[in-house]
Length: 137
Image (cartoon, rainbow, N blue to C red; front, side, top):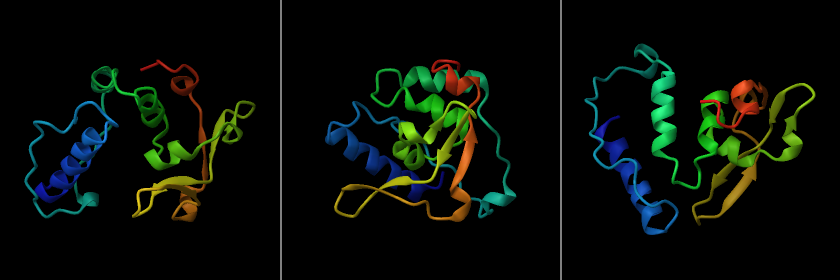
């Protein structure tokens, strides 16, 4: 993560600590990566291993959003999409979650729910055993 991006992330997390939303910033001690100038499409990406996912979830156990993390891991949903789903979006007959809205924050700090930014964001996500069993990771 480039220094500028990490600085912005740390600032947001520190604000969340100050506002009492989280108890501690998970970015404490994280160092910026060197920016080699490559585009994201030119770099190597990999999914977290099961061990890395388990460690990540365990570190977040005391936080209020702990239950959300496995949902994000198992679906690839964006945080705003997960925050906007309602029970009517969950289709247990076809085992899918309908993504048709996203939650975002306005400049004034209000949370709003609206349509996704792109047509490809409006989609159905299959529910696997990791979603149906909340602590499968």
